[in-house]
Amino acid sequence: MKNKKKQNIVPLKDLNLTDRFLFDEVLEDRETYQDVLSIIFGRDISLLDKPQTEKELRVSPLIRSIRMDVFAMSEEQSIYNTEMQDTRKTDLAKRSRYYQSLIDTGLLEPGVPNYNFLNRSFVIIIMTFDLFGYGKYVYTFENKCKEVPECSLGDGAVKIFISTKGKNADEVSEELIEFLKYAERSTNETANQVKSKRVKRVHDRVCKVKVNEEIGVKYMQAWEEKYYEREEGREEGRIAGREEGRIYNLARLVCKKLAKGMEAAAIADMLEEDEDVIRNICNIAEPYAPDYNIEGITKKLLEGEAEKQKGLE
Image (cartoon, rainbow, N blue to C red; front, side, top):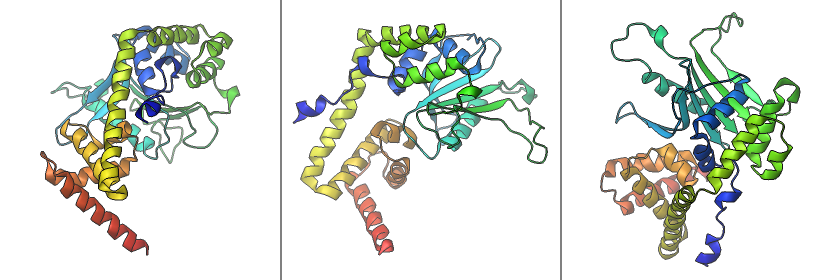
């Protein structure tokens, strides 16, 4: 049975750019990230240094950290944080707000009196769905005056949501559409149909990543860690009982990640669970740190479920 389940893994060679693992590995290359940003903005963008992938930003042990997919600064001193999101989530708008606020905290040295030294920053989220439902490929948000719409705040903070499901082809570049189609289906066949030299270069980078043995090992290790944790949990669930076992296992996995310093959002992403469910477990588990009595946490969670069901009756 285990061998059959292990076959469910999508081989690295079959991943699309919408997969976060492949996205991070591909855009870690400076020239490739430059090409992607240039496609998005419709102008050449040059980066100062090699992009940082899975960059963790924490300003205090008491404040939630963030883990950014791809982060870099351009030669014109603008900050670019680009995220790939292939799962619809309801908190993306406020997540972009939080990301931008934490990015800002690291941009000024202590003692700098003038906030005009803050860099222009872009938080870019590429989505495989239309979050806002207006059929646009690109949704750009900047702070403007409600009473005078043409009056911009000019704070240099920009949030851009890009959807692969856009329908307004006449309002965006053909190159951007080609890139988004390629991101959803990152194959030789798709690459052969595009006209953009930049998209073709992105494909070349994708091909190199997919045949790289070291990256292949890294991909397998990441997948196997998730796989075996789930298999271990399923086995414990069968022993402990269906519902109680499921909750016990989920609590155990969450506490294991908490012990490593991970935050609720990152744990939810890794376990592919709803963030509100994971956050509830984290809140209940907090008094039990650092040893984490899983039985005690499970009991609290089951009591909470029972109260919830009682309220629905």
